[in-house]
Length: 265
Image 1: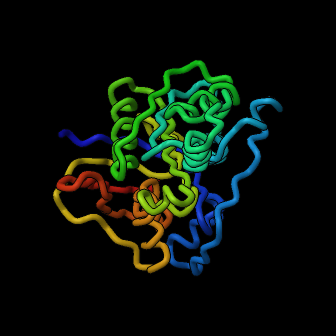
Image 2: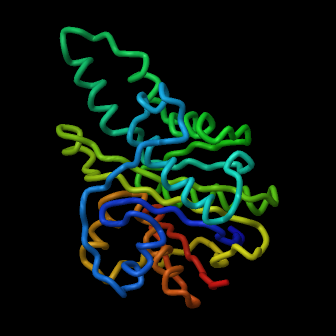
């Protein structure tokens, strides 16, 4: 694989104890202690009232992180191609559908059904932002953050266009949690550009490696990185928050990881 290079122009972040990118930089760079608390998902204000009522956790999460990243980059969300990456769908919605199927009344509501499809976040994103641009939706289990990053970078390099990556996961309640123990909602959004601009935060160059993935020094942050697939991107965000040339290795496949060179702009 050739090295893929792009510029990060905006970042969105939301997860346990991490309310946004602006305030989380001090935590990720070690200047402030990490204090985990349950993720609070904001109401998706851009959606019409009816869609807002029907929206599920994964929709609220992607809208929050994606819009934060795009606002920081000073861009129009409607103009950007998008890549959505998640290890699964909406955990709570999946749980409720399973409960209904296991009951005497197996009538699943249309809202529950359309919120169960893997591209539900992309659909609500287009409604909220008015985006008519291309949208890719993928899943690679625990490798989903790495797969999403590679897909977004490939689009940036091949199509010579900006792209927004929205990587996220949501919690599974019991009994699904015992089989898939994702404890909370977590999302990262990155606006990636092919050329450097005034908004650029960092240049990243990504290639494949067999080196071991980086771990985080803070035990609680490392637990978060391991627990939620989308949080595998935290070493990348830490490298950007440090504002210095860094080389990090991100989890991807069992025998292949992603080597990322970071240069601040």
